[in-house]
Image (tube, rainbow, N blue to C red; front, side):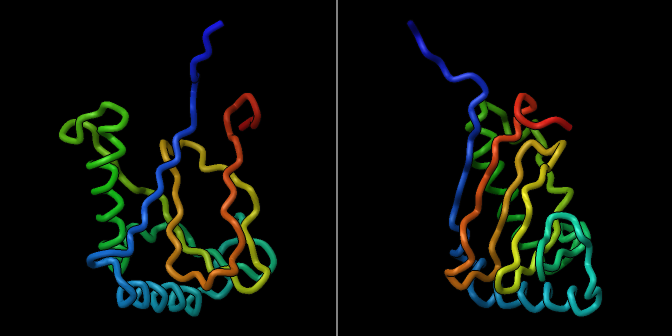
Length: 146
């Protein structure tokens, strides 16, 4: 009997903390997200639980996030697209739905779907080391309905 992978799930991970994504930039992003929360203390209630706060969509259009978004897009063009056999000159990747979370002590995000996304991701602006674990749950339609 032969066994082959069918519909595997690829997870790409990268430490972006080098070059211009440094502590100074992370501090800037922290201030920006804190400012977003001050302007809209309620935020939105999607997946955040307990005392967690979530911004509305649109961080990818916020000027402070431009450097981070550009770094992520460059990684997709340089590594992810070629991994899939796609030419970055003809395949276009965009980030069109991003938001910020602030999870205070004991706050968390409930399992949720990112329907319509080719890839979903997370970037931690500030993490103290006791934030728990990121868990990815199988979302293939054989397991999860729309």
